Structures are given as structure tokens and as C-alpha cells.
Image 1 (spheres, rainbow, N blue to C red):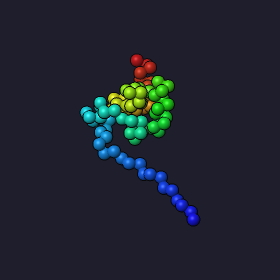
Image 2: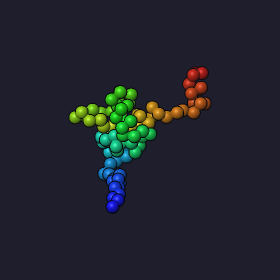
Image 3: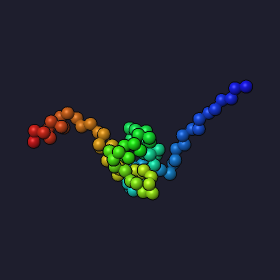
Image 4: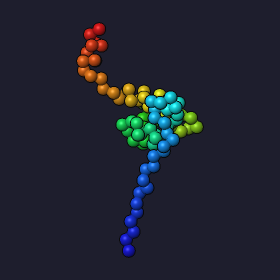
Length: 91
């Protein structure tokens, strides 16, 4: 008799504000919540935070990210257009 195991579905916490909103500015997101807005998994976010390669908060020995942190990380990974970077160098 074969039994099949199903993985639990990811639940979306509707009470989590978006980082760009005033509420999200100071909300502390767990790595699992922050991965929705960033290009890395929760595990990778923790590793980058422990290596101090990205901004994070370390309250109660837990990695969290504020909306401000998420926006800063997003800016760090943004690639600027070539015309924009050459203008900066020539001025």
C-alpha cells in the first residue's frame, strides 16, 4: 500500500505590508517574507546577512529586514544603464 506525502502549501501572510509603504518602512520582515521582494531565497538572505554583505537587523539574535533594508538591497543589485555610468565618469 503506497502512501503519498504532500508538501504543505506556502501561506501568504496578508498582514505583511509592502516595503514601499509607510507601514513597511519600519516593519521587520523575516527572511521568508523578504524573499518575496528580493532575488534570493531566505537561506541565501541569511547567509549574506551573516557575512555582512547586505543590511539587516539583528534584534533578539534573529535576522530581520526593514522596508528600508529591502529597498537598499534592491538598489545594491540594480544595474544602471551604460549611458548613465559613462556620463558619471566623464563629469
